Amino acid sequence: MGKSSRAKNRPKNAGTDTSSEAGAVGPRQPCPCGSGKRYKACHGAAGGAADVYIARPFEGLAGECDLIALRELVPAATASLQVTGAEDRVVKLCTLLPMAAPAMSRESGEVWLGLQVQHSFGDPSRDLAAVLELALASEPDIIGLTDAPGPGPRLQDLVTNTSLDVTVHEGFEFWTSDLLVTDGLEDALAQANEAASPTARLTSVDAAYWTNVGPKEHLRWVMPEPEGELLDALARLHVDGSDVIVPDARLVGMFRAHGLLVPVWDLPVGTGAEVLEEPAAAFKTALDQALADTSDLTTEQRSARSGLANRQVTIR
Image (cartoon, rainbow, N blue to C red; front, side, top):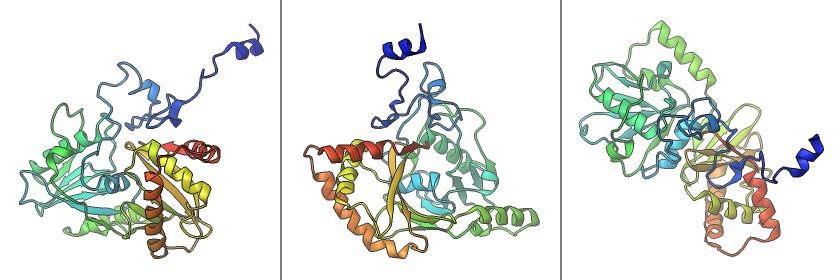
């Protein structure tokens, strides 16, 4: 059969990537578990991965959106955790730890849990909970997982926070808050600080982070609404011209991370974080109104929605 005949007789949907469907991961996209394999060869294949893949692993945790931001987007930040059975211990959630350690039991008695570690066992909440339990039971040391943790509690079973109070740091000096700085640690600290883009968390809305990546500034905002509803609302605002946070800003696309969408705006260089506070609060009000609108999308709005869906990148 000739090439043109094969194309003519091929089903219309053959070979297409279904990643634009709400919550879907395309078979050719990287598996969100972090294994480095394509989804169709990992958690998208029968028997392709031993562990169950959890699409929204942090659902139900206080500060879910901020937790996702700290895991995927923010260079240096910390938050205190309240942990069942360890009420007398200081437990600190950290974006990144020295040597990318999964966790550290410190000489001071504190336990630090690193978020930006990919264990690739299918459920990050279970992986982090397993590391946390090991760290709480260990002498001062670096703690990690070498094998799948198996059945057991998830973060939702251990963490009792009713809110997550995030502190964004300019760099990683918090690593040395209870340590004597050695030459090796000083070098690691300098290297980590050099790679950290300036970042700030907005105070007027939840889980929105300004960052300066050198030639560009961005606003990246983790939103908890269901994907389909959020896309509809963003499409309505786009057609109305109401998705411009500040003059000359542009909604350029979005990440999909741990089951939630993260809209991303390009900002004019020199904007900074403080200028975004009032416009972000006003946008949140407009977004809530658009989310409450259940009328059918117009043709123009459907076109805008399609464009937004096509500008998604799944990172986890």
